[in-house]
Image (cartoon, rainbow, N blue to C red; front, side):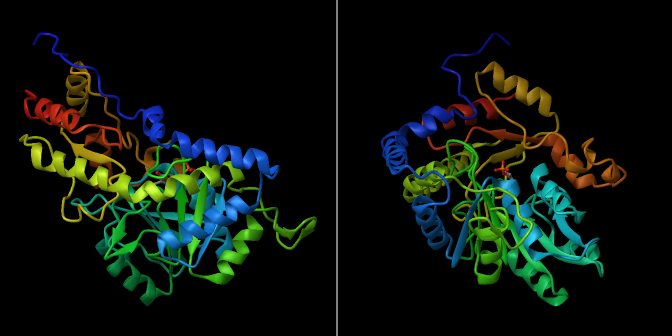
Length: 371
Ligand SMILES: *Cc1c(COP(=O)(O)O)cnc(C)c1O
């Protein structure tokens, strides 16, 4: 095969380009905060919290430092007895599992549904023990989990349902937004997410007033009145600058997600290759399409082939949490579906600044792959 690059390379994600349409708005936000002289826990955060709660269709939003802290703080706030277990998908980004162990709890990993790659509701029952207190669902790649059977199971067993919505801003399930589908949800505004800050950021959404109130203490030294500490809290706050930027970007999130849906549809309609497995299309218009993840049995070859054509891809994720050195206790688990997915998944470029003709080029290149 001769060297085939005939057009400019396509980056997996160019954050500068992604943020360029927001430049004016970001400058406005920055000027406002700079001029205010108030940089932590102020009006900008309050405004964004209200705006994001309303967007998610919940009563409360509590801004925190990042997505991992959002999940950890929720688990801390529930104050489960020591030794409690939390059911969590085996197929996820490490942060979902880290949140459980950071909160001093035990993660019980559950295999994914092989069609959706999300936690398999049919396998949750077997993972529930008398010590289980919560199910932490992850709307991975921007697709909401099967909340109906999961919520039903949780109700039967008296468990909390916590959403890891770090990849699911604006994704919906039966016309309700992620963030309002369980008892509480953790979001991340890490720059690559569908709603991204220019730095770290996170939020918790919930309809539970007592939980929200407790979280406002826990994110701020266990205090709401300066130098008065009711709880042993930490320091994890969404700062004014990030909150102001996010408040400016939020009104465009739905339009951006619709653009992602358009591009996902184009991929789904166009890619035809005997060895390539496409993501599920059944909830195309509801998914947030944070990532567009295909599978191929010989991943290294396909990645290599695409890069020869100037198409940059990524892997989400190469090593499952139970195989990470950080968790020697989980190593002995056998989770064959999770392990297979981790071997085969490839994320194609999908973001708000890609053009239709770039997607078409990627489609054509994949369809012609001699693999
Ligand atoms: C990004 C992400 C997190 C963590 O968010 P941070 O803000 O980076 O801490 C948690 N869970 C999932 C599924 C994520 O994608």
